[in-house]
Length: 310
Figure (cartoon, rainbow, N blue to C red):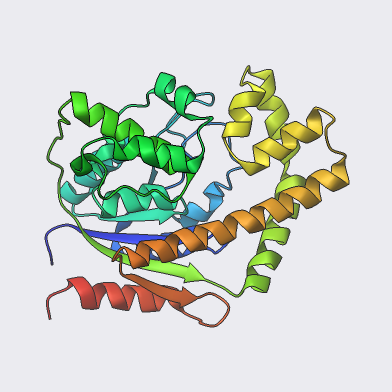
């Protein structure tokens, strides 16, 4: 075996990532590490699609990590995820268990694969508020006033990313970034894809099921526990639109249809991000969920071919 294998299962929402990851974990003595920016919170089960019953297969419970890890109302950033990931990864590797990173938060996964150290640079709210009104061209001018070594590789494609690039350059101009060496890993990345209509159908079915399971009631309970509407909106689409419905901004029909459309758009953005990862040199082995059968068997075979000594 190579030193530290890591199997990664990624894909857009409703692509069946968890089911595949759990099946493969059962076959390869693995445990799941969640790469989901919302499932990390307790009490946010239906809206985040935790589907914890999926972690049991053929009477066997597959262990999972970084789910129900934080209290609702807290914020969870990329660097916190990385710190938590490496702690779990090192523990599983020491136990000779296969870590399987599974989720759709591409930024989390990409930050690990590209070893982005700048995620440790703290947010500068004062600077962000100052820069927020600036046009794209003015932000570019501000960034380029810093030494080129601080921004040469920065993503300048959006307003948000330019502000973050300036934030990083400002920090590095006055501070030294201290980094702690992390345990290395050898990734095998599996991607799940589908035709657009298949994806839309699965999203529709899953949304209907979540509403039947009590999505609206879950949000009411979170509000009753003191989680603010502002934080819930920050947590993502399902919570944002339920809050709008509960506050009377949307009737039930409009709430459901607009949420469905927003989730479909989100899934499209997820796939765009994964394709960008490939352009950055990340090797993803794609499987079509509406074209192929026995994907879990193929993934196990690919893992054995990639990591087991012949």
